[in-house]
Amino acid sequence: MPLQEWSLTRFSSMLKKLNQKILMIIPFLFFVSVLNACHSEKSVRTSHKTAQSPREKMVSPLYFNLGEDKITDMNLIARNASWLKANSGTILLLEGHCDDRGSADYNIELGDKRARAVMKELLALGVSENQIVVVSYGKNHPATTEKTEEAKSKNRRVEFVVR
Image 1 (cartoon, one colour):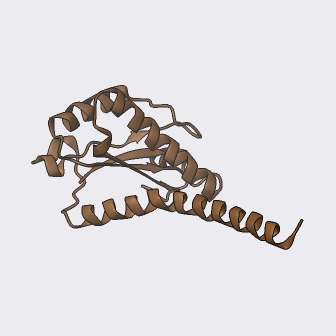
Image 2 (image 1 turned 135 degrees about the vertical axis):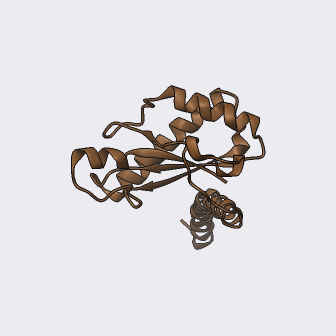
Image 3 (image 1 turned 180 degrees about the vertical axis):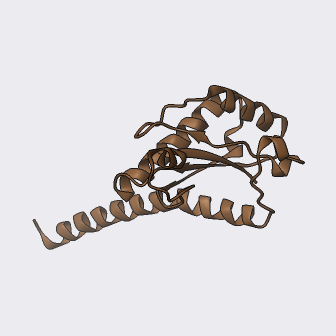
C-alpha cells in the first residue's frame, strides 16, 4: 500500500473513532447542562403526603427485584404520569440505583435499564419525553449501607426527583 493511501486510511479510521467518542459525550453534556439548570432551582425530596406545591412533589421510590428491571408497581407509574401531564413545565429526573452486588459497570448499566424502563412506561402513558431525564448511579448512592437483605432491597430502586 502506498504511503499516501495508508495515511488516508489511517486518517479516516481516526476520524471515525473521534466521531464515536464525540457521539458518546453529547448525551453526557446534555445531562450536565440539565443538572446545572436543576441545581439553580430548589431541590426538595418529599413524599406524596407532605407535598405542598408542584415543585416539591416527589413520591416514594419504585423498588426492583435483584438483577431485574421489571416494573413492580404500575399504579405508582400511572400516578406520576397523571401528575406530570398536569404539570407539563416540570422536569422529572429518574435516578436508577442498585445494591452493592456486581461490578460498577454492571450496576451502572442495570440502574440505567431500570430508569429507562420507568421512562418507557411514562412515555406510553402520554408524558412528554422533554420532561424526563434519566441518570444511573449504579451502587454509588445507596439508600442504606446496612448489609441485610432487606436493607439491600431498598437500594434497588428508581427515585423520582422533580425539578
